[in-house]
Length: 327
Image (cartoon, rainbow, N blue to C red; front, side):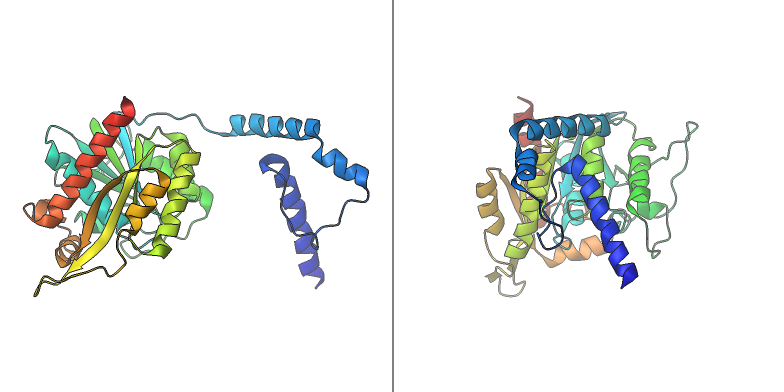
């Protein structure tokens, strides 16, 4: 009990100290002692004191935030994100990158797997091996289907778990961004990890991002987290280009009957609520799953299929939204 009590006291000390930087903590009254008198309350809530605290916070944050620095050779960076895992974000990122190049073969596109804990790009792009180093000690991306790719999956064993704390993850992300010879790219598509944590903040604070694409299924539980993701990008001043509604409808291969397994139009309604565009619908189709598992993405392995066309439409909508944003 003594150790538990001491630990809790230490927690409160740290929490109170952090409040001088990030704001006043909202801790239930039963956990901290109440002010002794009315004068103390007035002092804490006085307008002058509040403004001074806000100014100190602003100065501290201005010193602490890194300056954004473009990635050498990369014109525009696109992030593909989701608030929740398992909604098909990585599959969408891969086929978006291939769709950008399929729509305009004069464009060069790269793909960065920023999901350190669960890298999917090596499997989806059918790539194995370790990157070679240039004379400048930069890693050369592995290439398939004309897309240079970089992933933590190239640097560790395929089934090895990555059990790292935040600082190690941030260091890895920095290396994947800065210590790679990307060459000259029109677009770098970054497959973000799910959620709104350290990796997302590190990337958005360190490099200029042209826009974010939010992927979600139509079901309510996924839409809640998709909204959090969109709001996070807005807070860090990254334009949200729009939403992609993945697994929108299942069509029976035998009778062609359509079933909305995860609900219908949920992402469309969220897009209207957020005031952003619906970039497209991707069906729940066996062809997408099979080609992804084989490392032969549907855009290149079945280019004439309706599924590939759906991804190319999303890619075209992304390019249009980027052009509108630059106006």
